[in-house]
Image 1 (cartoon, rainbow, N blue to C red):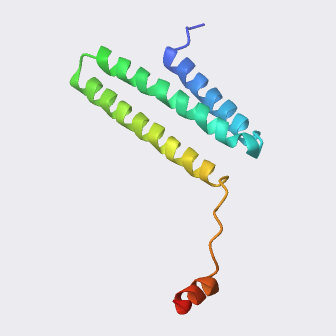
Image 2: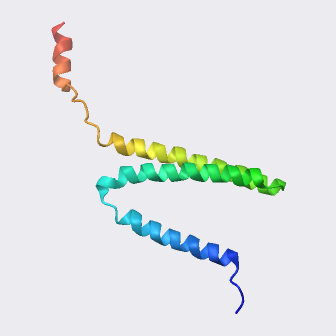
Image 3: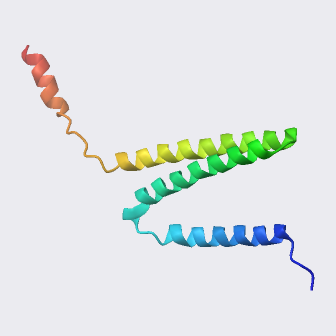
Length: 111
C-alpha cells in the first residue's frame, strides 16, 4: 500500500476542523456568544503571527506576495471580529431615557 500524500492528510484535517467548528458554534447557548467571539478573535491573532512567519520563510516573490495577502486578510478578520463583538456588547447596554417631545416643546414655549 502506498503512503498517503501529506496534502490529502492536511485536507482531511481541514475538513474535520470545519465540521467540529460548525457543531461547536451552533451548540453554544446565546449567552456565550460574546466570549466565543473573543476567543475567535484571539485565534485570528495567532493566525496573523503564523502568516507573518510563513511569509518571512518563503524565498519566492509569489510566496511573499501570498504571505502579505494572508497577513492582510487575517488582520481584516481580527478587526472585523472586534467590531462585531463591540456591536454585540452595545446591545446589552442600558439605553438612556429621552425626555418626551411634548415636555421639550412646553419648556421652549414657557421661556
